[in-house]
Length: 129
Length: 129
DNA sequence: ACTAACCTTTACGTTAACGAGAAGGTTAAG
DNA sequence: CTTAACCTTCTCGTTAACGTAAAGGTTAGT
Figure: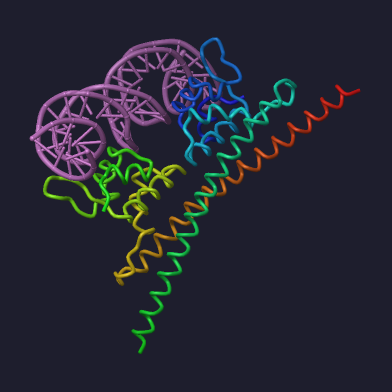
């Protein structure tokens, strides 16, 4: 069990952020002692890291709320599995479309790089005459 | 030459957004007539679309401002090419790290999908006894 | 020349995702 | 048993990226 500061440090966020996530229903402490101290487990750390990653690639906390559970399914509940698969596939498409946007960008950048480098070598050969 | 509404429509943004981008120095009209009307060319449309894409994969307008020019280099200026290549490579790394985050997410999702589907088929075979 | 459908600037409003105190209680090591 | 380093709940502030009128000028088709 870790206190909030420990989790925050490991996940690279502030304690404020963790409480805010909790408020949004994204991550919750495993236990809250009578005096109000939050105690987390490793799972909360993983979730927090994943939230950060998804956020970093352009998802809002609101969108993340809809999908974060899909990453950390307990293998117990046997109901409504079909729905789960549906959500997973939707999310997969979302991810894939972002990937292809980024890959397009990457191609363009690489093209610009080689174009520019060609230009530079032409300039250098002129200088070396 | 297109008026602002036309560009907005094509790019899938509002006119407000275009003026806001202009204010940030991201896209400018080709010409502004004496009465204040903005007239754009196709290049502005391309830029706007690219901005939207980059924004969609998690870059802020501030970050975009630093790189958007790299996508639309005029092949004229022959100075400072080395710097340009440097910036391009930095941006490329940025893109690549986002891609790998997304690919990790994708793998996890796919794993969850197959896990869940396995579970479902087990359940179905039980039912069919 | 009329009018719908554009365009302009100015300015206040909104949402998301926290940051930054204030005021005070808790823990853990020496 | 003291004290530094934690933790708590407020509450107000901030930045980004626009939205949304308000009040008025312009264009283009009939």
